[in-house]
Image 1 (cartoon, rainbow, N blue to C red):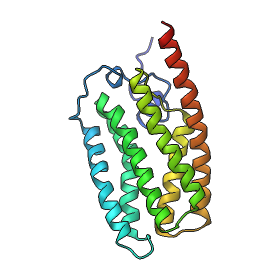
Image 2: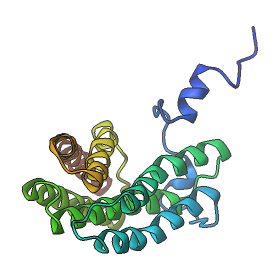
Image 3: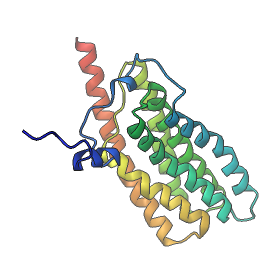
Image 4: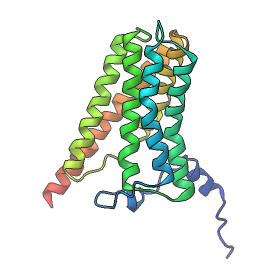
Length: 211
């Protein structure tokens, strides 16, 4: 029997986040040590610190659009993939990372939505739906933590991040129908993901109560 190649196709797919069939690492689960000082978490802290910079740059403009604020927003958004990639490369998974990453994602989207709302860079009805969805996700996460249930990312939720972030990024550069179409697509996927999160979470809470 030949030895399994550690650098085979399956490992590559997992490394780049294309294969997420494996359960979350144990170190990210409830009750595990936070272990805050890891390379992936450092990326999360930098992303969090960059949010005020983005807001200052955006509100320093006359119409909310500027290459500087757009690029900072893009860097914060891209950090979402970078910290996950670094966690997979280094094996430095942590409970802190599992809590920090979705929080920074929510705050990034809300910060972008606030700027786009203030300068009417995107339809306000879509931004209102987006903000409501993000606040709902924060509530669901808190509800899950109180009941010992982690919200595990589903595919509609993963897919929705790109068009939402992309729509906001384009609106910060040049508002138009492409940015609007991306946002609407992303919000639709995000709402579907939220419904699935809520259903899965309630089933998990009921299962835990029944024990």
